[in-house]
Image (cartoon, rainbow, N blue to C red; front, side):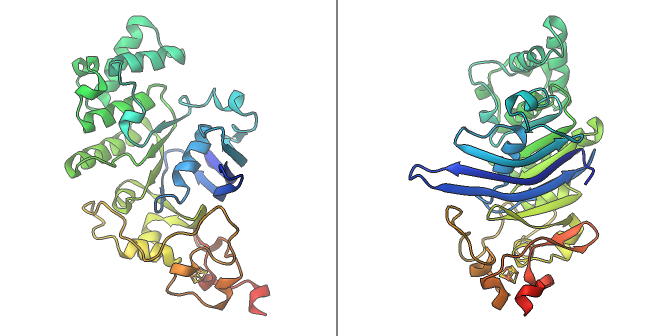
Length: 325
Ligand code: SF4
């Protein structure tokens, strides 16, 4: 892989109060090229947000991480906080789920952007205030509104302010975690248009974390589907929507009511994902799979290439020789 951002064999475990461990991310590898837009999709709890937070080095102390996160070939997780800090917000920035999580409720939004600019040595004083105004205008917030507190802004304006904060150091990669959740349909469309324009205008690469498939169809070139902490399929958005090679992807995409942006929920699939605090035998999707056959009970499927930049982890694409015997 030669991406701007490469995640290699990422694992994340969380310590549980009963002394056990929850294996939330299980060997995730992905690559984002300069200017590329990659959607990371799946149901709640599949590990997509944990993957994003691991890339940013922002997981809580109860998490253990293994694997590599390469930025321009440098492993930014190798030295812990000392190696990630110079790149966090400067090269890779995140828009957190829920704008209020990113904004300080007792500071005006402009002052928070000024603080971010000064903290990272991008600008000081009057210059920082001018840049904050420009940033807010670039996301559609008139400069005067920057003097308001987050609670004085609408949900859409808060999300725009959170995006402006994330862009304050002109990162090359933006991670957007469920950027349209909790917004009404009109505002969702506006935020997606904004992200689209910002990616074009700033040459940003985008890692979009979402359960919302129409959002991926609208914004992304490539998609990665996660299930139970693993990647089960990846490929172009066209391949995933029109020629999925994993039953989970097929059920997800077939059940999406409108790929032009009108659906706002991933349709439910019968059953529930497996618990990740105990070992799994065979395919994690087997209890919910309408295509399961005998090897699925005992043999864990691995990602295998099924086309150009298209891979799926399902025995329907070929059973390893040891299972066929
Ligand atoms: Fe279904 Fe078997 Fe494929 Fe798993 S490996 S998704 S159980 S067919």
